[in-house]
Length: 234
Ligand SMILES: Nc1ncnc2c1ncn2[C@@H]1O[C@H](COP(=O)(O)OP(=O)(O)OP(=O)(O)O)[C@@H](O)[C@H]1O
Ligand SMILES: [Mg+2]
Image (cartoon, rainbow, N blue to C red):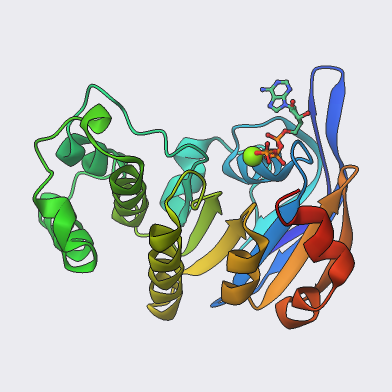
Protein backbone atom coordinates (compact mmCIF):
# COMPACT_ATOMS: atom_id res chain seq x y z
CA UNK A 1 0.00 0.00 0.00
CA UNK A 2 2.80 2.39 0.99
CA UNK A 3 6.22 1.90 -0.53
CA UNK A 4 9.08 4.20 0.42
CA UNK A 5 12.42 4.06 -1.33
CA UNK A 6 15.63 5.99 -0.73
CA UNK A 7 13.84 8.92 0.88
CA UNK A 8 15.92 12.01 1.66
CA UNK A 9 14.58 14.90 3.73
CA UNK A 10 16.50 17.94 4.97
CA UNK A 11 15.62 21.04 6.94
CA UNK A 12 17.89 23.61 5.33
CA UNK A 13 21.42 22.31 5.69
CA UNK A 14 20.40 19.67 8.25
CA UNK A 15 19.84 16.33 6.56
CA UNK A 16 17.58 14.11 8.64
CA UNK A 17 16.60 11.25 6.32
CA UNK A 18 19.44 9.82 4.23
CA UNK A 19 17.90 7.09 2.16
CA UNK A 20 14.98 5.61 4.08
CA UNK A 21 13.22 2.61 2.54
CA UNK A 22 10.34 0.57 3.93
CA UNK A 23 6.93 -0.90 3.12
CA UNK A 24 3.53 -0.84 4.76
CA UNK A 25 1.38 -3.62 3.29
CA UNK A 26 -2.37 -3.13 3.14
CA UNK A 27 -4.27 -4.30 6.22
CA UNK A 28 -1.25 -4.44 8.51
CA UNK A 29 0.09 -2.47 11.44
CA UNK A 30 3.73 -1.55 10.90
CA UNK A 31 5.79 0.25 13.52
CA UNK A 32 8.63 2.69 13.00
CA UNK A 33 10.94 2.85 16.01
CA UNK A 34 14.00 4.94 16.76
CA UNK A 35 15.63 7.18 19.34
CA UNK A 36 14.79 10.82 20.02
CA UNK A 37 15.50 12.97 17.02
CA UNK A 38 16.11 10.00 14.72
CA UNK A 39 13.61 11.32 12.19
CA UNK A 40 10.42 9.36 12.91
CA UNK A 41 8.16 12.42 12.81
CA UNK A 42 10.09 13.72 9.81
CA UNK A 43 9.31 10.46 7.98
CA UNK A 44 5.58 10.82 8.68
CA UNK A 45 5.67 14.52 7.73
CA UNK A 46 7.46 13.65 4.51
CA UNK A 47 4.67 11.21 3.62
CA UNK A 48 2.03 13.89 4.32
CA UNK A 49 3.84 16.47 2.21
CA UNK A 50 4.64 18.81 5.10
CA UNK A 51 8.40 18.12 5.43
CA UNK A 52 10.69 18.81 2.48
CA UNK A 53 11.42 15.37 0.98
CA UNK A 54 13.82 16.26 -1.80
CA UNK A 55 14.71 12.83 -3.21
CA UNK A 56 13.38 9.29 -3.31
CA UNK A 57 9.99 7.69 -3.85
CA UNK A 58 6.83 7.69 -1.77
CA UNK A 59 4.36 5.44 -3.52
CA UNK A 60 0.80 5.11 -2.21
CA UNK A 61 -1.56 2.61 -3.87
CA UNK A 62 0.79 2.55 -6.84
CA UNK A 63 0.90 6.33 -7.25
CA UNK A 64 3.91 8.57 -6.60
CA UNK A 65 2.93 11.18 -4.03
CA UNK A 66 6.26 12.79 -3.12
CA UNK A 67 5.98 16.50 -3.83
CA UNK A 68 2.17 16.60 -3.52
CA UNK A 69 0.59 18.98 -1.02
CA UNK A 70 -1.29 17.67 2.05
CA UNK A 71 -4.54 18.97 0.53
CA UNK A 72 -3.99 16.47 -2.29
CA UNK A 73 -2.73 13.64 -0.09
CA UNK A 74 -5.48 13.61 2.57
CA UNK A 75 -8.30 12.98 0.06
CA UNK A 76 -6.34 9.98 -1.27
CA UNK A 77 -6.88 8.38 2.14
CA UNK A 78 -3.79 9.14 4.21
CA UNK A 79 -4.46 10.78 7.54
CA UNK A 80 -2.14 11.60 10.40
CA UNK A 81 -2.71 11.77 14.15
CA UNK A 82 0.21 14.05 14.97
CA UNK A 83 2.64 14.00 17.86
CA UNK A 84 1.21 16.08 20.71
CA UNK A 85 -2.31 15.65 19.25
CA UNK A 86 -2.45 19.24 17.94
CA UNK A 87 -6.08 20.01 18.64
CA UNK A 88 -7.09 23.61 18.05
CA UNK A 89 -7.47 24.92 21.59
CA UNK A 90 -9.99 27.72 20.87
CA UNK A 91 -12.24 25.44 18.79
CA UNK A 92 -14.82 23.07 20.23
CA UNK A 93 -14.48 19.31 20.05
CA UNK A 94 -17.18 19.29 17.37
CA UNK A 95 -15.26 21.84 15.30
CA UNK A 96 -12.03 19.95 15.78
CA UNK A 97 -13.69 16.76 14.57
CA UNK A 98 -15.20 18.55 11.59
CA UNK A 99 -11.68 19.64 10.57
CA UNK A 100 -10.87 15.99 9.93
CA UNK A 101 -13.26 16.13 6.98
CA UNK A 102 -12.10 19.58 5.89
CA UNK A 103 -11.80 18.69 2.24
CA UNK A 104 -15.40 17.44 1.92
CA UNK A 105 -18.80 19.08 1.74
CA UNK A 106 -21.12 16.07 1.59
CA UNK A 107 -23.09 16.85 4.76
CA UNK A 108 -24.97 13.57 5.08
CA UNK A 109 -21.77 11.56 4.70
CA UNK A 110 -20.01 13.76 7.24
CA UNK A 111 -22.94 13.15 9.60
CA UNK A 112 -22.30 9.41 9.19
CA UNK A 113 -18.62 9.93 9.98
CA UNK A 114 -19.55 11.75 13.19
CA UNK A 115 -21.78 8.80 14.13
CA UNK A 116 -18.95 6.41 13.38
CA UNK A 117 -16.68 8.34 15.76
CA UNK A 118 -19.37 8.36 18.48
CA UNK A 119 -19.97 4.64 18.13
CA UNK A 120 -16.25 4.00 18.60
CA UNK A 121 -15.75 6.58 21.34
CA UNK A 122 -19.14 7.18 23.02
CA UNK A 123 -17.68 9.66 25.53
CA UNK A 124 -16.67 12.05 22.75
CA UNK A 125 -20.33 12.89 22.13
CA UNK A 126 -20.61 14.32 25.62
CA UNK A 127 -17.64 16.68 25.09
CA UNK A 128 -18.75 18.21 21.80
CA UNK A 129 -19.18 21.77 23.05
CA UNK A 130 -15.98 21.79 25.12
CA UNK A 131 -12.95 23.64 23.86
CA UNK A 132 -9.82 21.72 22.88
CA UNK A 133 -7.99 23.12 25.91
CA UNK A 134 -10.69 21.94 28.33
CA UNK A 135 -9.81 18.28 27.81
CA UNK A 136 -7.37 15.99 29.59
CA UNK A 137 -4.53 14.49 27.59
CA UNK A 138 -6.39 11.18 27.32
CA UNK A 139 -9.55 12.94 26.12
CA UNK A 140 -7.53 14.95 23.60
CA UNK A 141 -6.04 11.76 22.23
CA UNK A 142 -9.48 10.27 21.62
CA UNK A 143 -10.60 13.45 19.85
CA UNK A 144 -7.41 13.43 17.77
CA UNK A 145 -8.16 9.83 16.73
CA UNK A 146 -11.75 10.83 16.02
CA UNK A 147 -10.60 13.73 13.87
CA UNK A 148 -8.36 11.32 11.96
CA UNK A 149 -11.22 8.88 11.39
CA UNK A 150 -13.39 11.73 10.06
CA UNK A 151 -11.03 11.76 7.08
CA UNK A 152 -11.98 8.15 6.20
CA UNK A 153 -8.38 7.00 6.15
CA UNK A 154 -7.17 3.98 4.26
CA UNK A 155 -3.79 4.54 5.91
CA UNK A 156 -3.37 6.17 9.32
CA UNK A 157 -0.05 7.57 10.48
CA UNK A 158 0.08 7.64 14.28
CA UNK A 159 2.86 9.69 15.88
CA UNK A 160 3.49 8.71 19.51
CA UNK A 161 -0.15 8.30 20.51
CA UNK A 162 0.75 6.95 23.96
CA UNK A 163 2.93 9.92 24.96
CA UNK A 164 1.67 11.57 28.13
CA UNK A 165 -1.04 8.99 28.80
CA UNK A 166 -1.52 7.31 32.17
CA UNK A 167 -0.58 3.58 32.07
CA UNK A 168 -4.20 2.45 32.28
CA UNK A 169 -5.00 4.54 29.21
CA UNK A 170 -2.01 3.15 27.33
CA UNK A 171 -3.54 -0.33 27.47
CA UNK A 172 -6.85 1.10 26.26
CA UNK A 173 -5.08 2.90 23.45
CA UNK A 174 -3.58 -0.39 22.32
CA UNK A 175 -7.10 -1.82 22.01
CA UNK A 176 -8.27 1.24 20.08
CA UNK A 177 -5.46 0.91 17.55
CA UNK A 178 -6.08 -2.83 17.13
CA UNK A 179 -9.78 -2.16 16.60
CA UNK A 180 -9.12 0.49 13.94
CA UNK A 181 -6.81 -1.97 12.18
CA UNK A 182 -9.41 -4.76 12.41
CA UNK A 183 -11.98 -2.54 10.73
CA UNK A 184 -9.72 -2.31 7.69
CA UNK A 185 -7.49 0.74 8.13
CA UNK A 186 -3.78 0.16 7.57
CA UNK A 187 -1.56 1.71 10.24
CA UNK A 188 1.96 3.09 10.43
CA UNK A 189 2.70 3.52 14.12
CA UNK A 190 5.52 5.61 15.57
CA UNK A 191 5.99 4.95 19.29
CA UNK A 192 8.48 5.50 22.08
CA UNK A 193 6.67 2.76 23.94
CA UNK A 194 8.37 -0.18 22.24
CA UNK A 195 6.41 -2.79 24.23
CA UNK A 196 3.13 -1.31 23.10
CA UNK A 197 4.24 -0.89 19.49
CA UNK A 198 5.57 -4.42 19.17
CA UNK A 199 2.48 -5.90 20.81
CA UNK A 200 0.28 -4.31 18.13
CA UNK A 201 2.40 -4.34 15.00
CA UNK A 202 3.19 -7.29 12.78
CA UNK A 203 6.40 -5.78 11.44
CA UNK A 204 8.86 -3.20 12.70
CA UNK A 205 11.57 -0.93 11.37
CA UNK A 206 14.26 0.82 13.39
CA UNK A 207 15.49 4.19 12.19
CA UNK A 208 19.09 5.19 12.96
CA UNK A 209 21.41 7.78 11.42
CA UNK A 210 18.79 8.69 8.85
CA UNK A 211 18.38 5.14 7.56
CA UNK A 212 16.53 1.96 8.39
CA UNK A 213 19.01 0.02 10.53
CA UNK A 214 16.81 -2.98 11.24
CA UNK A 215 13.73 -4.49 9.61
CA UNK A 216 12.13 -7.54 11.19
CA UNK A 217 8.82 -9.13 12.15
CA UNK A 218 7.59 -7.59 15.41
CA UNK A 219 7.81 -10.95 17.11
CA UNK A 220 11.51 -11.15 16.36
CA UNK A 221 12.14 -7.56 17.46
CA UNK A 222 10.43 -8.31 20.76
CA UNK A 223 13.13 -10.85 21.46
CA UNK A 224 15.93 -8.56 20.31
CA UNK A 225 17.62 -7.29 23.46
CA UNK A 226 19.63 -4.65 21.66
CA UNK A 227 16.40 -3.04 20.46
CA UNK A 228 14.49 -3.29 23.70
CA UNK A 229 17.49 -2.13 25.78
CA UNK A 230 18.21 0.79 23.53
CA UNK A 231 14.67 2.08 23.27
CA UNK A 232 12.94 0.98 26.44
CA UNK A 233 13.00 3.80 28.91
CA UNK A 234 16.11 5.02 27.09
N1 LIG B 1 11.16 22.05 11.27
C1 LIG B 1 12.42 21.68 11.57
N2 LIG B 1 13.47 22.47 11.27
C2 LIG B 1 14.74 22.09 11.56
N3 LIG B 1 15.07 20.93 12.14
C3 LIG B 1 14.07 20.09 12.47
C4 LIG B 1 12.70 20.41 12.20
N4 LIG B 1 11.92 19.39 12.64
C5 LIG B 1 12.77 18.48 13.15
N5 LIG B 1 14.06 18.89 13.05
C6 LIG B 1 15.26 18.13 13.47
O1 LIG B 1 15.29 16.93 12.74
C7 LIG B 1 15.70 15.84 13.55
C8 LIG B 1 14.64 14.75 13.52
O2 LIG B 1 13.46 15.24 14.15
P1 LIG B 1 12.13 14.39 14.26
O3 LIG B 1 11.13 15.24 14.92
O4 LIG B 1 11.79 13.82 12.94
O5 LIG B 1 12.61 13.20 15.21
P2 LIG B 1 11.76 12.11 15.98
O6 LIG B 1 12.41 10.79 15.70
O7 LIG B 1 10.33 12.24 15.68
O8 LIG B 1 12.06 12.49 17.50
P3 LIG B 1 11.14 12.43 18.82
O9 LIG B 1 11.28 11.05 19.33
O10 LIG B 1 11.76 13.43 19.72
O11 LIG B 1 9.74 12.78 18.43
C9 LIG B 1 15.97 16.41 14.92
O12 LIG B 1 17.35 16.64 15.03
C10 LIG B 1 15.20 17.72 14.93
O13 LIG B 1 15.83 18.66 15.76
MG1 LIG C 1 8.70 12.71 16.76
